[in-house]
Amino acid sequence: MFCQTDLSDDPVSLFFNSVYQRLRLMNPEIKSVGYGCYRVDDDMIHVFDFGYIGENDPPVQWDVIKYPNDNATGITPLWNGVENPDPLPKGTVKPVGIPVSILFKEQIKNVVKAELKDSTGNKVDCILIYPGNDINNKQINSITLVPKMMLNKLTKYTVSIEVELGANGEKKQFEWSFETGDVKE
Image 1 (tube, rainbow, N blue to C red):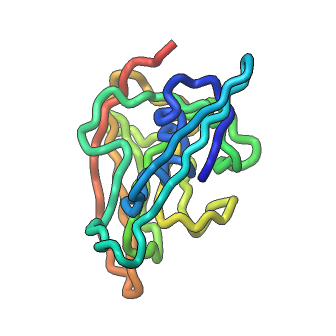
Image 2: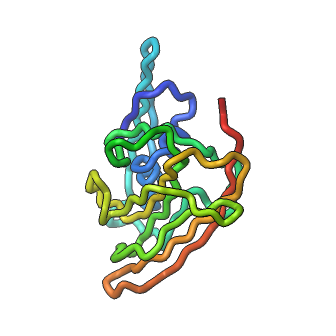
């Protein structure tokens, strides 16, 4: 279960446009989701409650889950950077660009490369978050890139990840693209 105080009318986007909450929502072993909210004047609390598959349920077949998805369009280029606990290093100037995440079933042994490039091939300066450097020690088996600045609107971006997975450290590469939308006012 987790909750967030925000006046958003779209709590799923509120959580998906973050780091830790997004990774929880991406978990393929979620069997049920409950949602509730409570509002008093200018305060609103959103609460999500998750039920996961049990030992008697059939296992979920998956290898990786990416967000944004390959060839996704209309992705918001901006994240306000507000999350508790804060996944970003102290002193990070906010707002930032929308986080890009890949969740793995096999355990991450080593991150070889993690980069985001714009449509002209320029590398975007990002904060890298994975189990080996997560300041909150969440140990979520994922890699997240958080652009240090808002991404350009209506622009195609390409994500390239090279990682060593599993006990043997098998090297695997992942590449996918998405396109940002316009900035919502």
